[in-house]
Image (cartoon, rainbow, N blue to C red):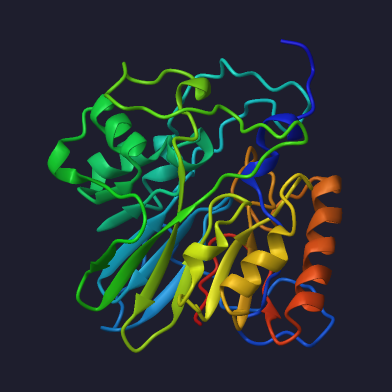
Length: 325
């Protein structure tokens, strides 16, 4: 297909983000936090009960280890090349799951939280769920896509926002949200699945399928809000007040006052962590690769967070690094 500006397709998949260093960044400094690198991303060491760590897997993906349980958010590790970052975006790109990349990193998972079903959030989820037996939470579209991949209905939980799910030492509150829009005010691959389709073959077979956010509350630990796209239904955020917010970087200005509305709705979190700022079609190696225009947007986002929420610390994460909040 002809060369196209990638932001015309997935600008909304990233969001304006401010990031805070878990160790505490000096005001005005925007560098990756100096947290202990994960030397066991592939083979995690034994953890004491109650220990909590957060590892960024690029895009909006996270691995959260809570004692002997593991929660994954939008785990996308295959990072296939669609041409999105080279100006030759191919909507017919095959969904090729990179088991050689996934298997060393996903030794276990108890829960998978899906914000929406675009390929860079969902395509690895069915394989991970089959490999680990994890329960998958997502929209009705995620439910039907899971069935299309052969996952049993007993392993899939459809949610829509408002649910508070109790897992004993932690809980997850589901929050109705929105996907951002590109400069033409459109959403990439719009649509929902109201019944199981044929098994998806290309990235175009995975529509947005509605968008959710998730608030993870850990007993005796932090409360953390996860976004997967850069729009917000701020009235749904009332009372959440998380300690930490993982915020997708915005790549278009068609969503008005996104960052002010989000930060105010979340009651100005202590720590703001940008996500979806990286080139997610490259190997998962530090430092995270950032396209020049995205670097500019990231710097603008950090400055905006400091202006809007001066008491928030900004943490720019690196891949597979253990952060403790």
